Length: 358
Image (cartoon, rainbow, N blue to C red; front, side, top):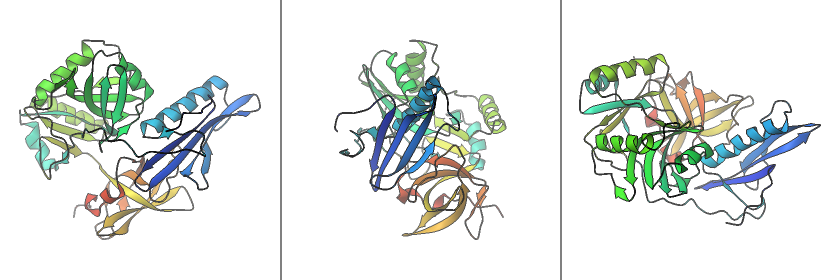
């Protein structure tokens, strides 16, 4: 990749994976005696969609903060810097050689059994991005659910660099924060074959014995007894969180997702799915499609909130919904969550749909 040519006021970022070849530009522009933060995005070589992150001009310090946060978020999603937006030579994403362990869903009837099973602990199911972090001394890199190397939020990177040694934690990235729940390696020692209860204890020791004033690194709360798990479940429901996770305490770390079952299970309180944008509507909404066989079938429209960019046709996006109509498959009460650059269009299947109970 060419060297980065960047001023403090302007940057061009690029993302390429499969058929996606996108550019995102951000800039601090003067507006009288104040400043605005503008952006443009779209397929590289095509006309870009433009917008602003400042509804009215702000002072320079505020503009810098908005600009830095915007660039940090894009890099965390896998965007990288090109030379100048014209002669950029992109490269395919690098494989890290590591794959995360993924969870299988369970039905509500199974949740009651898991609450009473002392072989399983429980944790919150977060609504973020699954992210491993590989740290070798001062070198840090994120690893997404596909095993590709991606960027890290600067806030997370700064705090992890303060933890001595080399290690690979597993966790969930949400905004500027990282919720850690597993540890795969520590100072060259492979921990994957150890029971989860030991890996969790080693993670707690690694983070809490070195410092206790983290602002952006968080250990996931873990419940062990039936009473603790029941209280956690009830609290997560009250707070309208995404769901709950159950992990078998004596299980090793196994990359990938089993065909069914497995030692790590999830139960979502509301349904979510990944779908392909098939049409941009006149107002701020898009039509979503899911693959049935080789063709895409519509599952309805979803409104794009004002604080989100309208995704392009072909983009994979996540949507939360109450249920799908039995006959049409249209989503009821859909809520747009955002794009997913770590999910392939081929994974957007109608089998994800949760239908209204009879």
